Length: 107
Image (tube, rainbow, N blue to C red; front, top):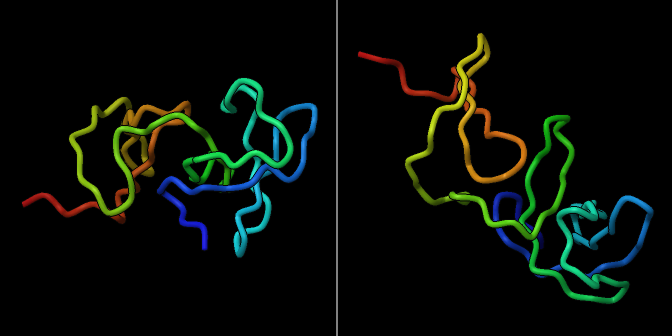
């Protein structure tokens, strides 16, 4: 069973011009974009990939290491505050959104 927010050992099952699809079992096939894939990646390879939601809420994979994982804690730099929440730099291309509804209220 593949877990979002963690590294998973996944098999490359399809190659497309813009990347590779990994077999994530119950989560289906997840895109590993070419720019986030290991050099020489090919069909049948087992990839240790981090799974997360992109800005369109689709599952996506990368071999890059984020600064924090699910069930872990870290101090992250705030990069912007919007009317929906706070964006944090967690070391991946897209910043991590923490909606105001998921934040503790200020005292």
